[in-house]
Amino acid sequence: MKPFSKSFWRALPAIFSRHLREDKTSTHDHAAETPATLCALPERSDFESLAPGVGYFGALEYTNGPFPINGWLLAPQQLKTFGLYIDDALVQVVPAQKTPPDFGVINAKGVPSLFAFLLSEESADLPSFARIQVVGCTAEKPVRQLATFFRPAMNSSVPTPPAELMERVTGNRDGHLVKAAGLRCCCEFLDTLSRYQDLGTIRRVLDWGCGCGRVTVHLKDFFSRYPDAEVYGCDIDREAIGWCQQNIDAARFSTIEPFPPTNWPANTFDAVVSCSVFTHLARDVQHAWLNEMNRITVPGGILLASVVSKFPVSRVPPGGIYDDVVDVRLEGIAPDGYYRSTHQTRDYTLREWSAHFDVLEFIENGIESAQDLVVMRKRV
Ligand SMILES: C[S@@+](CC[C@H](N)C(=O)[O-])C[C@H]1O[C@@H](n2cnc3c(N)ncnc32)[C@H](O)[C@@H]1O
Image (cartoon, rainbow, N blue to C red; front, top):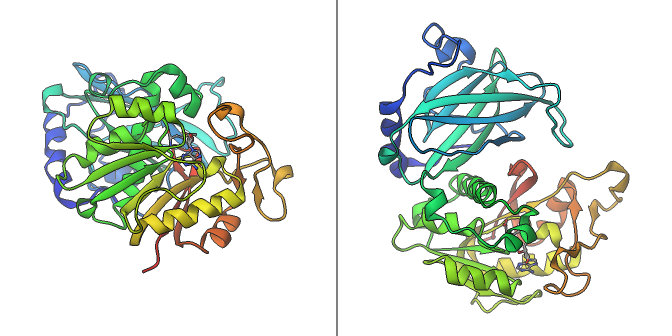
């Protein structure tokens, strides 16, 4: 995965490296081992071929003093070392720690290793968005990576949706976690998008199925650096959209119908992102919406959409999609039986969705370690 490009990240590493200090609590002697001897980590992030790992960041909260960056990452074997990159520059290397015996990872294939970095920062100097990337290594080489954004003032600057609205789309009522997860999701979308489009040239981006704006709120803050960029969000959930309209300024939200078309003219959006929406639609409804996404996207525009390709083996039907189970969380909002829990294989997705778009990539675990990310481009 290539880091964000070019100009706007250029100034940021200096800010961080200026404030770096040795982690006094660690028993590991960083000075004695250079990154190169640990696992050949490059000074600048360069991990295009490294798949996103399954893992999580702990709460990234910075007030004053040392700034901890903790979490875990799953790999085929126990990891030896972690490298931390901030805005593309290597800033710290620490030994990996084993997980305690009672550490639970649901449905995980692999071994979790813990990372714990400690940085010193002065909040006044932190940029409003920093990209944090953790790379896990065996003794010889980097094997997995995990990335997110960090927004120092997120608690105060990002509005917290009502608990019921957060629960409806994430199953979680904790505002801090929901905002942090939305930020990671936004980072994953933008990281991927930046490999296909210069983000500075995007005029209109749509978050289709935005719910209570968990991802949209970060997208619109990110794109605010480009004066010509407009961020849109839409959903069939009128109450969630009403909350977004009242609380998230500078983005344009609208309620749409469960079935296409939308009111947007053809060729409106340079990019469309969609987190966990196709994962709730039956196969024929997916086709109808892929068709509509194609209509409203500019030729050459990108659609990034998540799917779930993991499901109990016994349930994988011969066609490669399982869309029979109704999800009741949208009762009274979506038409009866509309909202599903849909699982589909990589092969199904590539075969069926390429009727609408060129499918450029299928990134396993590309969204929040939980869903896969399908990268599509509208044919010119
Ligand atoms: C699991 S939630 C994800 C919400 C949001 N993308 C996020 O990541 O927080 C799925 C969302 O898709 C919305 N949805 C379902 N069908 C839709 C459709 N046809 N068009 C737009 N939104 C839809 C639901 O109302 C719900 O808000």
